[in-house]
View (cartoon, rainbow, N blue to C red):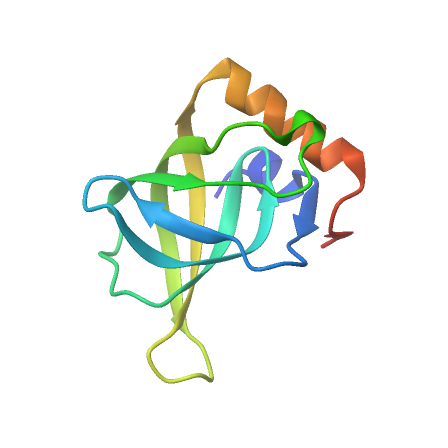
Length: 116
């Protein structure tokens, strides 16, 4: 795994943020933490190892209440959580519009959440 990816500044998510699979328009889980390069998802739906996903989420408290962020993401790993039916799932972002990346950077800089 790329060291730069692992060193990216991460912020924990304080309020529930649902993540939607845009291909099926279904909620697959909630964000746990987020960085410019990826996210930790608490998945409540079964996911396919090493698969590519199109995902959407909306960051509350974003400056100017920006629009949802859509990303192409690669599922790097999964691990069962202590809660039945849930898994910890690590994603690396592979595509994102520049405007959405800037929105994410603004959110990271705004101090919402706590450093992870």
